[in-house]
Length: 164
Length: 177
Image (tube, rainbow over all chains, first blue to last red; front, side, top):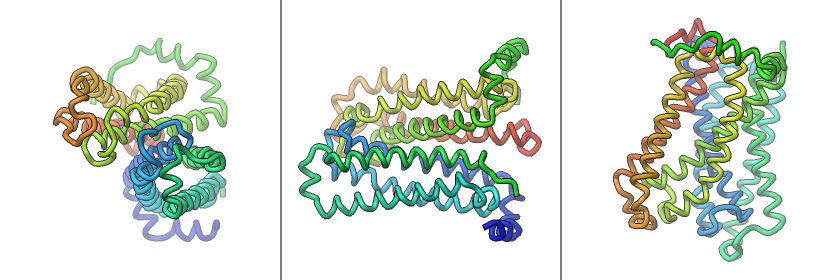
């Protein structure tokens, strides 16, 4: 990974991004705003499952409202994240906080996709229940915890750089 | 840009507090507080945006405005309190390096503007909410308030992020923005 990071750092794309020193902070701002949009959705869907918010709306309606915003938020965060990696490959790729964040992000995305798929397969069940079953509620708490960890580890990348 | 002047005695008093010294000297305290701060802000902005988008008419249009604010508002305020606590700790610990940064003052200026916008909306526009609660006919004043709120909070995030770059890269980003 260190070799790859060094190779990427020496590439023209990486040099260009660093020469224009304003690009990384600007991209970081967009990254944070995209995460805000998706975290609002994550919170509202999971609170709906936990019966703590959105009781006036069915589970299906809540998911329809917020799931697309989560996926779009993830998409924008991935693009802006990729630009940051190209700009500072060693800072990000040789970094435990970064890889921890990536693993939890992947798990969160799998969980969201699974939720979407069970929602469409068991439409009637979800339409009728006022909140998730006990098992789903545990997953909702897990989902919030994982996304919170993604955000915290994301900020921690700046402090977990390994000297190479 | 002329920045507000804070008396040196005040700066010294704040930076010499024992918890200020601890935050500056500890290897984990500042990153930990900052991470919680980012998390809190992400939740503040994310939940505010849900209400703003409803007011503008972009999303949640089938849900009553009062319902959506009831669902989001307590989380917004909870996260906001967390952001204020963590933000204060960071600010006090390194106040001397922040007061010379334009982004720092601009962030608070935009937060103040967002607060005024919210107050006007709450005290004036929201009073007639019963007439436009459940349908899409949100009055223009409410749409303007929602748009302003989105713009102002976006600026708060941008200038908040920029503080870090001006403090650490003063020569690159200069005293100006």
